[in-house]
Length: 196
Image (tube, rainbow, N blue to C red; front, side, top):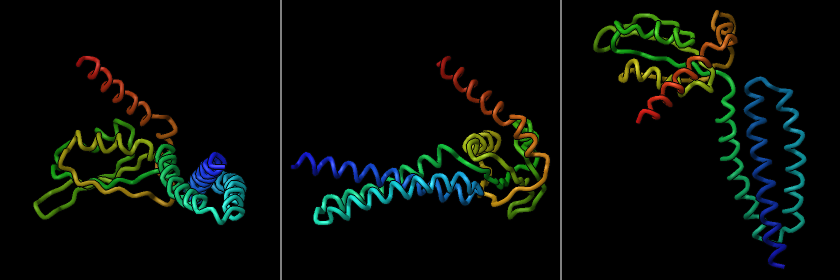
């Protein structure tokens, strides 16, 4: 009897982890405008949800099933967000303000394949170089590392744009310039580690 109770708890938890992970992905895909993929995920999501909820409702007197359902839900949120981070769908816009307007910041970022719009600004302590950079989210961390290597004191703010239209940059992304830049940087880092 105890064996069956443990199996039931594990099944309910796994079902809820899968359900909530799919739910998280469905919502994110919907927000990113990928409605058909989101709808497909929604079909499986609701079937899994119905099975899990049915198991709990059929055994409502068993408190461990209710606890497993709640734990599964919480773990599903964590797993779903981790999956979304790995997928890194969409783009990010990064605003950077450099305290040194004489650095060839813009050129270095463009050479790595990033779309950069820059202008001179004036801050509390003098002239600044202000830039707006667009990047696929999957290369966001690489962009931050690049910015910090050029100017460790740079002020950085990032956000996700809702819609992107026009500009030359989309064509450049399709050609894979950023991918090549990331691969080159990773190869250089591996070579440095091999030397150590």
